[in-house]
Image 1: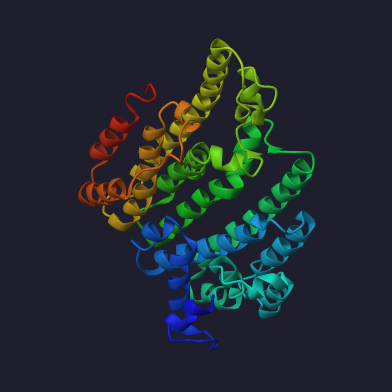
Image 2: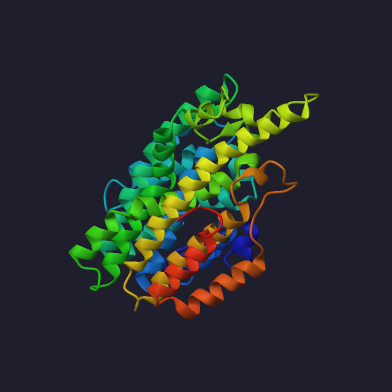
Length: 374
């Protein structure tokens, strides 16, 4: 996307130092729908390390999501990207090998995701400017996510060749969510601890018991919210084992509403479908419980770190409240999601009360009350 560089007055100049950081800050606003808000509430090394981690994971995700690339090609590309991060040197040759292997069509695209991938040589070297205590966790999470994404890309291609991509069990769902979100929770604990002496070994150990669930909270809530949208791609993350408990042979059968049947048959179908989604909604709330507990372990003097956690969690909780038991997801004309006014209210209220564990717990439970039994 040349206009990103043009808007910064850079054209196609070599981007290094301050210009490279400026590019990283600017491209974040183009590739992130929601996380730019809470990443930019952070300051200093914590901000920079999480910014870079997000961009690296976005590069990996762009490869994994490409609709035209074969899974075997994705596996190779993700392997090349992971190779960059195997040493602290972040070798130029490995970066060049990855960029050279990107699809030719991406070089003609004005999409910001592709622009970011083609500027891997700009954003990756920035990690060397950070102390190793920040850089090492970023390298580790990038490598682990690349391997996980490659694994699921191969599984998805094999499944889609026969119709739909589905997950057999709740364990499969947890594994998928771990690779795309849970490991981010692990990253955050390491970076939060690196950023303050107030997170000692004991507190860090308590956070590590919950950090994967922190990531899963946001991912499962998104899976619930995006269920209908995913179905248009013949993808369903609702585990088959849950669907079978409620009389569906396959998860995708939930989207085949019976036509020309008696009202009681239709009502039964809708009731069973709602029961399936209610199980997933309960799972999301369970992870949100852990995520709130995790956030309260962040020292309350670390205002920006707490806000970084609270904003997406309360947005997810507000979305889950809107969705209710999940039955309305299939009837809605458009995706159910909170309004901008709700987002503004969350930002304002949490900015006033971030330090109060009591307020956080009370406000969260009010959102959950009436939707799920506590």
